[in-house]
Length: 404
View 1 (tube, one colour):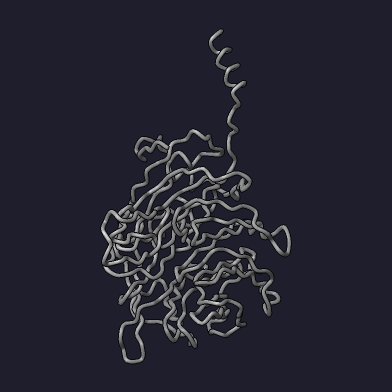
View 2: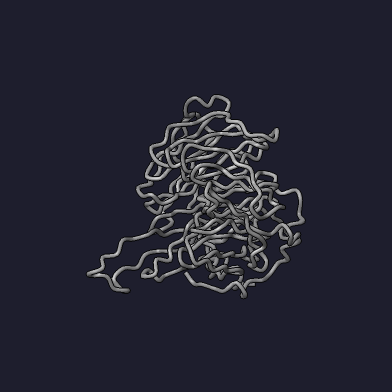
């Protein structure tokens, strides 16, 4: 399809979009294939520029992604989509260019938006990231500047790297997963002041419940999820969930707080846990996950649609409210390489996906032209679509216009 640049699209003031309250849930149409809206491509395979997930900002105006060797990049929602309610099949694909690009020398382990992010209030527009041999950084989403850092130290006063980071639901705290503990920083107090919650194994994934303030799920590399509570100012363990075959890499709380969805590395199972009866899985879904790579999951704000990528490039969608044992509602082959990131727009029927993974290179036969793998960030329309008129209707309409 023909590509066009963002500048060629008629603009709409994002502040008018943000101030339109209240927001309604997105109307998804997962009975038809997704239509591609926009794409950014990193074609240089020799430098291994594969993507590591993608995340919509809480206000839906920006999309954040990390590129291995290409830093962190923020992309804006194409302006014509702010007011789009249905889509024509003839729409051209927009070529995405980063509005903000932050170069980081080492690997980025994890990143997350500030939960109260609103583009109408620049002070709230920021995200955190953790990387190899470095502290946790808080970045400005308007300028790309470093605002502050949070530093965790081990027992011999050496700077540690956090493998996972997450904000609390209210944004007042930053949770950071380390080898032997989870450190909790006050967001408004950067530096090295923190409290610790001891854990047995390296934390690999963190997520906070929005419906139950103070409840945090801690996934570790030894296949276990621990739910803890800090609502009364202290930390206490609520329960432990065991059922995965690999280290936990992705989790999502339902927005009513009753369920937790989890996935693990080299584990094809997605497990739904009923937190009211946490002793055993509520149901199990399957996807392709044949590597150690993190494969993201996401849940729509109405708690209805669960979306997951796959190492086979497919995106699978389940209606997790229809039965106790959901089957795949829809499966779409959106990428030719591993689809490691999926993110549903909070208020529009738009799905963001990212693709790519590390590929072993044969040093004896490798050249830059030998292989070409897909390393892309894409936006897809998954809402109402205008029906294409049949040939007879087109001929009649053309004849009517000619006679007039």
